[in-house]
Length: 435
Image 1 (cartoon, rainbow, N blue to C red):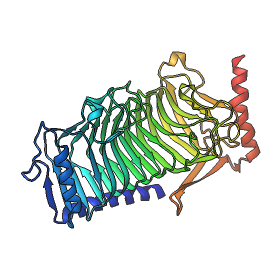
Image 2: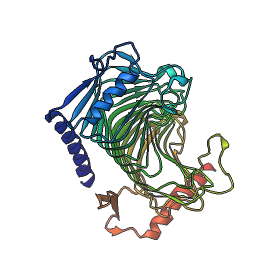
Image 3: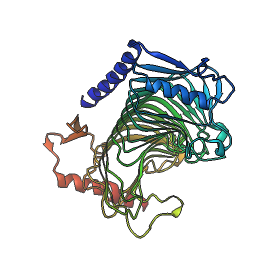
Image 4: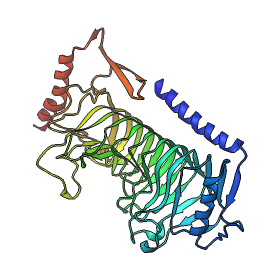
């Protein structure tokens, strides 16, 4: 009930922002007008910069418009603060340069920074395909953007880096986005979020060569709903624990999402040998559909791409209060659930595991849940303990609180009985079956 209220409030705020922006009189700043001189099939870098300067300085709500057509853009930095709410309507296609030396900004192509009450919409496209494999640059970045909405925008073929990067933002909604990159393009995360809170991603299609959505440190109160992911590496929390100044991650909900032909489904990944102790807590993956996913559910606290980590010590990131609920579909591998927790800080209170996953090739189907010790003292596997009643609510900090009551016939299951049963099912029975 609490989560529904939170979703309703987020949608209400989004609609209120859009209604307020459309109801108030506004000044139009068209980059193709005689004032700015932008033309289709031409470079509009200077025209767009001048139009933004005037729109941002307007004392009244304003609208900056890039009409239908194709325009070359070497880069743009939409920097605030602005004097009033501002709408940016990208109706056409903006094309990045093919040569990285032509970029106006180093490391990114377009940026929105220090803006309150931004409404980015129009059905247009940020096309980075010209720079693909030629240089590394973020397609669009959002830094310190608040109380804003991004709607009906497409990002194509980012230049071997993130499509959308979100940093130090809050109360920001992404809705009806289309994000596409080749399956084999590395580091092309669809949306990367870090040090941000109250972010909503909904009704979005993402297909990339890396994570559809990657969640970095300091992310709080993130809600992801109705996202179609594939191809790509799934939705990942992390990687965490690589740097000494990282902040905790908590209060995340991923709900009603579909993964198709992805390398991973829902994943939490942390580095071994973390320089400091960190936390990832109250993370909920609910109502998820997996279609031929290689690793549908995975906690990897030994994440070490390219063997560049410190193998001397285990991960110091504490993972707790994780929920995998109503996850269904097919796995492309024999192990559909792989939970590899830290040896020094075992996963804690990662209860309420509910999943129905079948291997695509049933002739090779095996035991599909793999646990690596140590594991949490309490694990609820509802295939074995179907009699459970769980409630959830959101507290004053926006965290989802869950309470589960386990009932077997007419008596409450004792903790120690449950603990013994868990060990028997997960470790002793599989060992017997091998003989």
